[in-house]
Image (cartoon, rainbow over all chains, first blue to last red; front, side, top):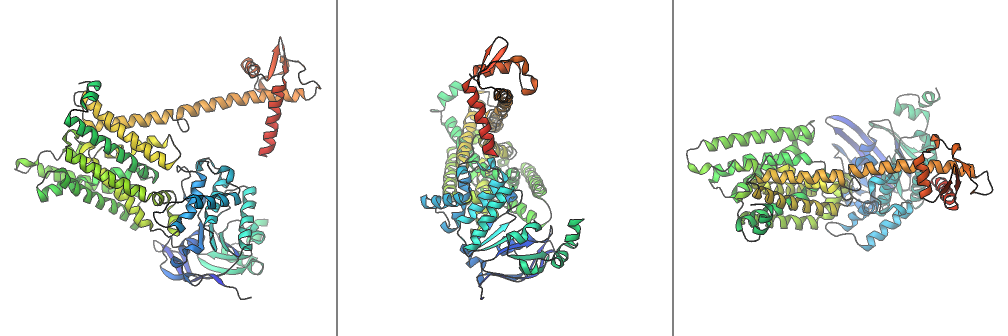
Length: 245
Length: 374
């Protein structure tokens, strides 16, 4: 099968104050996979996503999205940041936040209109947040906030979705709702890259996985590489033994 | 002059009208832009900027020898901007946190400004007096040209704010995401910061270096209590700011010429206090009232639930039961029984109670609701 390459990373190195966070990463993500990035705390998982999206400037390396630099391919990419990265007491409504997904295609100065509102409402419907559209965002539960963020990314109708811990602090219902949406995205041929913490659910949710701990440990199909060897290399302990103790 | 005389005079007296208009416009623009500072959690930035503006005023005077506010405020603007970008530089280039950077810039610039002020005061020429009015502000020195400048700057700020409303809003809420959408976040950031610096510099003559941040933050803090929409908050903060300006001027003019700046700040502070207590959604008072009401409601519902359980065993739901079977664990008190009766959920006769069909329905609804939530 000759798959197209969605994301290609070469020799990526990122450092905060001289301490390397990502070291010489080479990574190829084929189109149409649902990929988990796993690794311990401080492994640079979020940093990897942020570097790809240009939020953090790498000291070395190159990143391309469908063969071109990210700055030329923004329209193809959507981002779901960590829920905790924003102030949910900000004075605005759920619909308003979802509408922000249209700002990129609107460009400078132009305001969202009826068309944008319609897109936003459709996307809220998909994540089951339509009944809460006029809710002040601070009144939403953690799971609902996560769905709002997801809806905002869906609005962008991108080809590649980057998500930073979308299952963090959400209940089982929301987790299932979210993973179903992600699976639907993959069915539609989209590439979905997710920073993930729960190793138990990796084989069930994802078909592709990248092990990361400052360096890239391994990347590939879950069924081939999601094994004790890689887990031990990434987490520094024999994961299965530690869990079963 | 009392307050009433003031409001009669304000339409005819040139000086009063100028000062009032000036403080109103200033309050409005500071309130609006202050909302952005508060939402960015950069409240203290205003304080640092206003203090950082002081050396600029002194240097502008030393270079030009001019004392017109236009020249001096231009100096203030330049040094305020330098201070601001140094703060940004310190936080991004060193390990220091923003509070440390703010503290350093605030005190160093202010110290330097004070040094220059005392130096100027020691100069032999007679022209030096009056620069210290920028410390605590002196609204009485406002003239028409000052107010015109304020109106022009406010107009431009408003225009920019409306033009870039969408960009401001998304940057305030989620800067990283804004960047991924392709917006130049640095530009938006600089634009917002520049407008805030401009508003602060504009107020130095009236409110002064020391109190300036209050007029920036207080109206915004008060407005936040009343609304959950950014647009409403900005407009409301503008209105509260303008009112503070007008009332502050009125009080200061009618009470033996109390210093205007501090009075404006106190009026704005009163708005904040009032809002903290009385705002319906976030205020302390209504929160307490809601809390108590919920507690009482909960007790009533508990009793009703118990009664519902008892009634289940009987064919006739309105079959009377002894009050004695109720106890405190079900939230029963004499008062709660009375309330249940007032709601029409039960009928009390002598030492017995009976559930009404209405009460039965209410209790049933609650079960259904509970099932729904689960």
